[in-house]
Image (cartoon, rainbow, N blue to C red):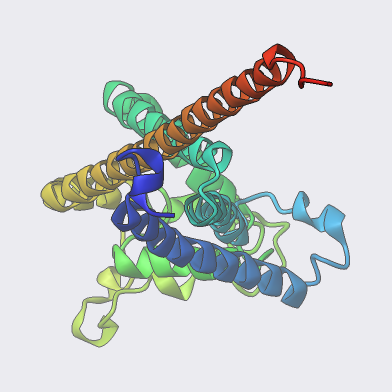
Length: 283
């Protein structure tokens, strides 16, 4: 409908279709991530044995796909359908949900800065728990191998952390052929060019991660600020669209009320005219 019907109020098509187009990408990407997660679980037989989801002692990387994909799917659905159908409930849900995510990210960032030592201890505990579960899940194994190869590290704080794993520990009761060893991802990238004592990376992944953060602080901060600004921008656009829709509806409601009042006045006038008209002259 044209804006003339609403006495100058109309929904911005630019904002409406920008929100729709942007969120449909998130919606499709979210569905893809959830689909990848379900496929990975089906390959590992998790879907046929749901209880095995909680059996793994460490982190199942598939959870990252499922959680991130699920959040993106919900946000994308609410923003996409809400903008297309001009549904204020879905648009408000989109804004509130996005605002909660922004608040959680901000809170996490502040707490991580204030409680750095506690975060470091938790990261060490997290890595050690995953070291214990190494070889129990192929996705977790690939994630640990990628991390150690990317940062040229071994274990949380050094190769000795691999004594926590039942396959690599040096106890007499360990029958594994990998006893007293470490995964291949702990090896240096060019062992032929190294001394024998340098075949294994001796630096832990926690110190290497801290060093990487310090070296790439500008990049990390830029990414976080960019994501935060994008979220604020999305919230503002959704709220602007909600305001436009409510203004149009209010204008339309007011116009209908005015039309009803005018119609009632005409009906009252006609009724009075009928009853007050003089009786016809009869001979």
